[in-house]
Length: 396
Ligand code: CTP
Image (cartoon, rainbow, N blue to C red; front, side):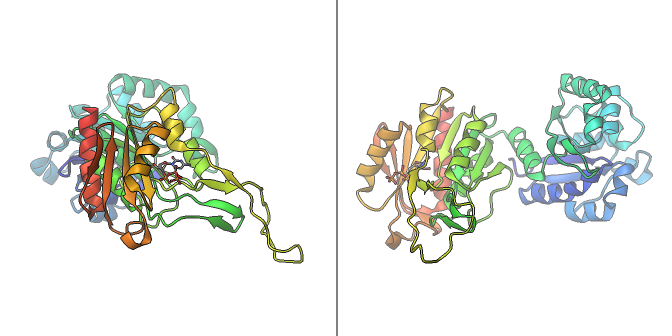
């Protein structure tokens, strides 16, 4: 995402308006300048004070505000934006947009703008399903408005179904994907990260020492080059990056299903430390100590996510695997590249003495069809930047 991007955020009058406070926070954390516009109904759900405090700027509300019109009229608001985002886009706001109404600041701005518009609808499921809303939606899409969501789930009105506004991170990801002029803009990249947890019984699991630091850094670097990043992570110890579409999973089998559902993608970077095995038996209750003695745990092999993607008929154009080795790093990684059918392998020595697993630095070898390149020991963020640049070159 371009760090100086300017977004005008129109907050509509729905209960989901509260999520906009977090949306503003996440956008500002990425360096985006947010200019908030509140409809009259929105002020019933969030206060102009909290919105202004988070945005770090004045809130615009009134079409006929003399001070605003002198300093920052509705035309100027449009001119000073790279993108207009409407969240939540209520049924009423969508109807106004589709009908070309201009009876308040938000609708006038939307009618006057020549900038791209992204809306995040949120409403009761029956309002969403109503033929009038379907017509308005079709009209807005035909006018070139980008629509994100709504998601399905429990609604504030007590019903269940489509109508929940997309989560702030999803909206940020959609903004990041369209608001960048980087070399990866328009490209979708899948990144896996972190460990997987394989349950032994309802309270115990098998895990590994992966922190998720390298995968997270790669996802951020790809996002910064403009890619739409689908980030599938196991229970990592460091926070997930912002501005990506986030999927949290626990087991290898869940990770596989989530990766397959993300296809098609242009590239996949499989940085996760996937457990090779899961427990074969299905212990639905906690295993107890007792006269039956020490339990024997039978293991069963997990699916190989990387190999599955490489053999898939929607195989990404570029598939990058990792190889975590403790000896014969290059030889093992070269064999792994051939065995799994991926294009590149990022190989690293994860022996405890290197401090790489769970640490901040990484020393990697990039194995391609041209052989092996040795990269210097670098912070994981710099390894990520170099790798993202190589991915951009390969997809150009
Ligand atoms: N990987 C995967 N699915 C698995 C195991 C690994 O997708 N079930 C991926 C990892 O994300 C990584 C690559 O395969 O990109 C290699 O992982 P690694 O743990 O080094 O190799 P393994 O395949 O597990 O082989 P081994 O443990 O024998 O070294």
